[in-house]
Image 1 (cartoon, rainbow, N blue to C red):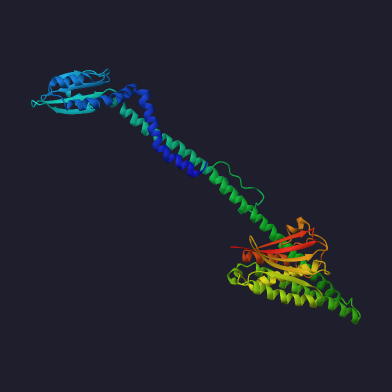
Image 2: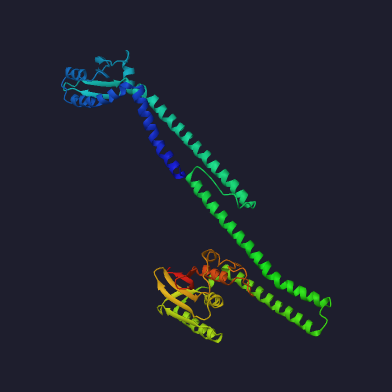
Length: 431
């Protein structure tokens, strides 16, 4: 049960419970009360008839017509009884007692100037009202204490379990799920905590892969540099040609190491939130057309072919960072040229769709990318082909994903077996 439901029950119950308890007490312990209420209408008729009385006899006759559930007495100006009838349950009483217990009092001035006082009382109402009031007060107190104590205990249990779970997470335990049973509000809060735990765990795993990837990809050229430099220091390269060959290898590995460090620094900069402030609203189609023309020239110089079609309105404006978007599209094109079929052209397509703008890079694949690889291909240091070796860290597609996140866009990858193509598509939402 949600907390707001509990509090709503407490608020409503504060008004409903005393009414129910009072009614129950009156019906159980004051059986005459119902008959008294039924007689009330007749007392009202009696009150109207007193206005038409012309003598004491008329008043007494009207009083005699009242139901037996009520007691009635008629006094004169000297408090002398002119008529009296006691209901069952009343003993003899003085006029003062009758005055104190009366529930209906009416003074009647007769045409002859005589003043007559009529008092009506009931055994039920005065006797059991204090009991009903006490029962109402006690019922409210019991209801509030009972429901409030259960609510407080439920909240304490839920908070205690949440405290234990957060303490485990703070101590580094990311494996134990956060489970809270009971109140829906705290169950939802526990689910949010557990979702946070899973995200933190995934981020820790990603960082671990990141550091392992950095360590592995930096260690390989460093090992070569160290090995060949030690060989030179130990005099193993006796002739000049061997020394030159060793020095060339050291120089090549040093440059490779420098490029990898530069790529690492570039990736770290891209993932920094400071780039979010550099997005500017500008025309998209002219920017893509200029990029396509430049890449077509570079592709032809390198012996490749790039075809493209920019089917976007010239006036379409989008918030983006030109340098970052250029870098992302260059990475996608390099990936298409590097791992696609070089005998067939790569295509760049930009068009409007129901969900927004699609910018796709399509290449004919040498082999399709399996779905299990596509799930991780945008993660840092992930290489679907573990035998693939190159100068980079495997951060190209991860950089693209980071750039898309900065812009609030999406990047999708898929292989179409029917067409024999691999598609990397950037999606710019309408918003």
